[in-house]
Length: 212
Length: 388
Image (cartoon, rainbow over all chains, first blue to last red; front, side):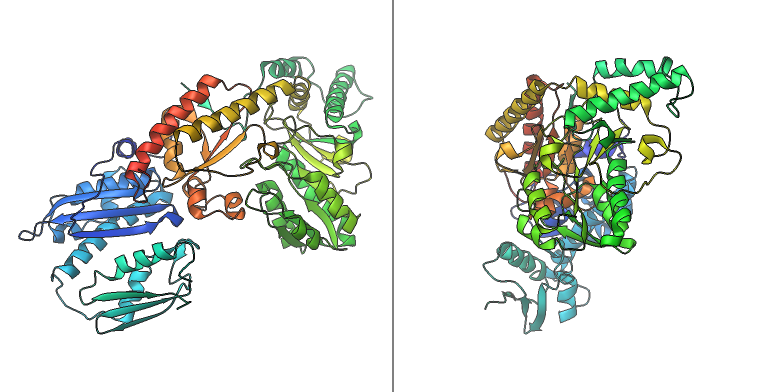
């Protein structure tokens, strides 16, 4: 068979490692969206003393490359300290899988992004930030660039779903060009909260729909 | 077990077709360039004309209205560009639908670049062309309309007779083309009743060889030759005709058995019933009224999972199907047909097309469902979206 996939990739697609959720995870991150056809969710358990990743699990919606790269990223990260795990790049995942087809590189990028975001979320929530830079509107917008509008298949900033962002006294207000009773509204709200609330100085995230 | 369920892409050739073609490789090897040359040339000429008559009779046309081409794509290129360029003096407006095949859509895009105005009419949730929008789009300037007979992805059979009536009452001079490449041999029709002016056919979706097709051109329709190089095919298509292909195409038509079509329809219905009885949260894409659906087509979207994963897994188990998922396409875009029907990206990403033929069996359907059950269960367990 001359599929453009390595044996290792196929093996991990059929028998992925570290599948599942960690109910009492110390950090969590979701990258991608069902609208894009690619989504990875990562859960971390971190030893507070050694800052080592003691457990990591994933769930994936996507193609074979997506599943296999998420699996390999969890294997690469498991047992590493957060500082070591931060250095893992998509190229490591790609090399470990024996080379992805060019159109599938984004799968490795997505899985590694999920790992980095989960680590970042952990750092925000556990006082590990080297510099405690106050969250600005720009920081929030940059994070929202990873949230996909399921109606349009592109991120909420590009899709102009987000009309405005305000950050004041630990409260982030996100104004959407979307009605609350619209399909996907609840889902999008949850995703935005999940994306913004880990920021260290954010106490509350308010998602405001256009009919309010 | 190996199960081929991608027959809407192409089918296995029937042995009788191959047998009929053999003489054109060993005995009838001449070209029909002129009927006044030699006996071998005359014999080949006769062979082509017999083939033309068989196909013409089958679709209810005159033999002189059938032009052989290298396939459905060339037939459609000739139809759309040929009519547009021949009739440009009457107007430069062309209309088609959002769910046409690539041959139609790319041809009209090409016309657009040459200064024609193109309107794409939307379809409804089931893939049927919006007749009101269609009527509105037709004007005095509209020289050509192209509406497919049946969609190869979601199986929607368009109400062609109604389409023709609507269009011709608004502008009797609008030429109507249909891409019937997945219709011929599968759906009963007769060019006389259908009322369309041009129809593209192909041989390889009905157990004929690849690389041969035909264009039906109603007598009196103005059309400009697209392939230059000699006077073959009523001076409408230059080049050496694909004689083995033409003979094979005619044989495939000759041996066509409507009972086989009914057998395929029953098998398709069976496959659908077993799948929905064993797997939850399955969305049917295309017409839910199966009388308006291609007899060999089934297109289902499995919630919470992505199509390329399904296809790859099934392929490892010997079952060949395709998906409308973005990952399956070159452009990393989900199926434009499913999107045009107003479905979500997710529905398109999770879609799987099963297309059957007379060579499929009930055992194969049972095996397919067992593999499908396995893969959907496994992928849903992995999915962060739910489903288990």
